[in-house]
Length: 122
Image 1 (cartoon, rainbow, N blue to C red):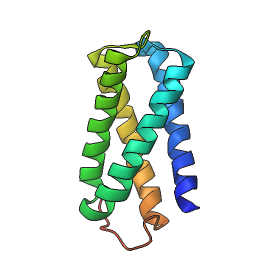
Image 2: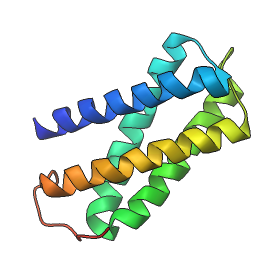
Image 3: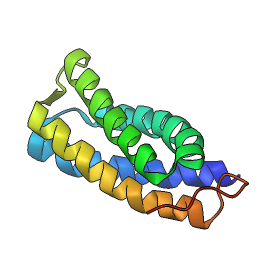
Image 4: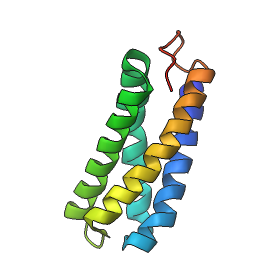
């Protein structure tokens, strides 16, 4: 149950960031924004939040989140029709998402979302 709540929170902030920044830095359809937010949420939650964060700490999880965000956005821009986002937009959105992820990791660590103690790290 805790994972569903965490996924919901992560999806909402990912969707909000993408919905606010993509129209400013590029363009995409609403369906594409929803799909990219979903792919980002699921992949970074499993890899960054459940796997890397408890084992390696916040720094490495943030690096992974930044890299995955940039990769997912660039792949979307390459393969989705009418999804236009240049390198500057990819970098800015990935950076904003990483800052919000930093706060989300504090939430995950504070609520013991992993079911065990993790490495506390800023």
